[in-house]
Amino acid sequence: MNYKIEEIEGIGKARAEKLANAGIKTTGDLLAQAASARGRKVVAERCGVSSVRLLKWVNMADLMRISGVGEEYSELLEAANCNTVKQLRRRNPVNLSKRMLEINAEKKLVRSPPSETQVKKWVDQAAKLEPMLTY
View 1 (cartoon, rainbow, N blue to C red):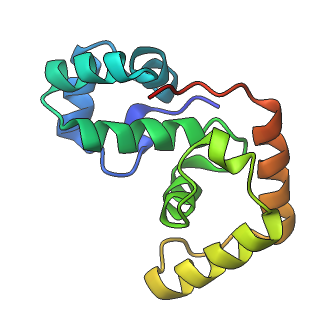
View 2: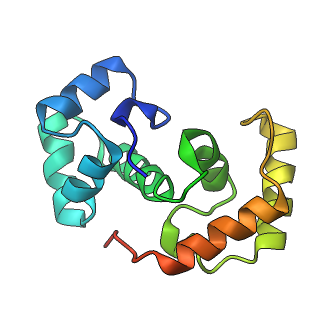
C-alpha cells in the first residue's frame, strides 16, 4: 500500500513540504530513501527532522504496507509496541488484539479497534512481506 506522506501521524503540511522537496511524497518514497540507518541520517539532515522522529515515521510507513492498517491502525500498533512488519509477523494475533483493545480503551487512538480476525490477517500478511528496514 502506498499513501500520501502526510497521512503518517505527525507529518503536517510544513513537514510534508520539506519531505516533498527531498523527493518524498509517499510512504513508498520514504521507505525507498530511509529504510536504512544511513538513508535515514541523510533524509533527517536534508529535511531538518530528528532521527528519532524520522524513524517513527519510517516504522509507521512500514506498517502501512499491510492492507487495512493505514495511518489509524499504524499508530495503535506502535502504541502496542509493534513497530514494524518484521515485529508484526512474529506476534500472536490473539495477544496483540487484546493488547490493542486495552491501549485503545486507555488512549482512545481509534474509533473502532480492529477485530481479532483482522489482526490475524495482518500477521499473516506480514509473514509474507519481506522486511524493508535495517538498523
